[in-house]
Image 1 (cartoon, rainbow, N blue to C red):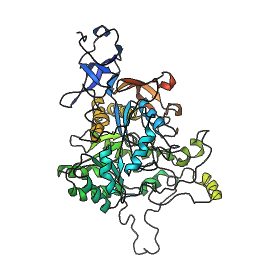
Image 2: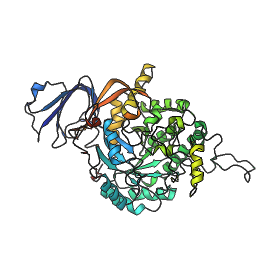
Image 3: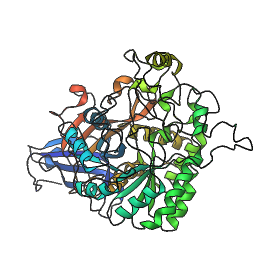
Image 4: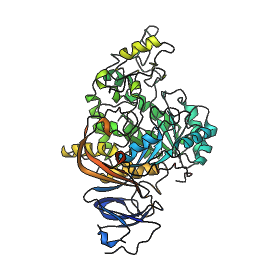
Length: 537
């Protein structure tokens, strides 16, 4: 078989393997041998052959790679990442965060609207973020807008400017510039966006009207949400964020869904399995709602979190092994409501994690004390204008799950996390998602969630030539030196994985090669782009 008739602008790149996950014309996915030709000039996939063609089938000028038996996958689309720039670049930034993404086969990230200053809640704030991203991105970056009290008039201008969707919190976000929304705010956002092709997303935790039973001694009882145990015990923190927080929020959102029956509603980072039957019933009733879960909820469980190990703190919290098992079962359910899997990469400086001394690295020798947050439902922020108190809290606060910042760093680790966990579960006889299913939930469905299904998330003629080369036999352990994000602090440190990304191609250009020069970032520099095309799907 010859492919000599292929033409394209500029040099031809040919990638082949005995195993590739392709997108068929009906959008179904298939694992098959394939040879894929790419154009670095147009950034598109030119042709696909369902067989491994030899190099002799192509012009001598073509760059040819046969990766057999490694997997060729579409680039991962991580639809939930906090890059924090501008404003909190000591936490993360476009340059470091997108390098981390590229090293893990992620070719598109969608940046969340909060933790940067200003947040993406106004058109002017969006423009500042776009300006900050210029020349820094190693992968393509899209952007969400935010919904906060009082910004409804900004939502349609953000749609016009290319926002991929919108997110709001039903509980304190942890940063004062992104306050929680009320039911009135949600209703206004729904009616404003009801006729637009967008996605309205929610951090679905909400404090019930009475979180504890206070009995007759209400005048003398502890306030609801007060911790019922040692602050360094993970069980104390987990008890403070019960499943009822999530179910109550989901029910509140669903109660308003009739205001915008065609609007796509989405629950971010679903943790509690108690939400699943509620969401399934809503979908059966015709409500357009989906959910995502995260790599850490599928690979970590509260059963194995040591007291004081605040690297594991996130909100909603990592729950029990039983809860995790049910999440995995939902991924394989024919009528599943969890459609996508994302990282929710939410980094901070190691100081804000208040790590115990045995978990600190040598360079982490100072503690930042001016961060005000209350993302545990109660205000556990450090006292202001009190240096002496802050110095004391450097010792007393170590390992405090309530005072530590909540967030897990993992962008670029998704494929190894999922593949390792799925392989382990399959060996135990569980039904688990295949590599094709993983591509569907981490590439195809995430791209469609943000209106990019026409160009991202699939290996198909005419789509962006975003390719991940994945070695599913590589067994390795994550050390701090393998972490490409800015702050080398993650609960995944020391975990052994099966499967590792070997190369990442973005729009026909190789941007990462494991073991390559410049720490693997083999391109001349960042070639990622800000995605600002107006959403139409």
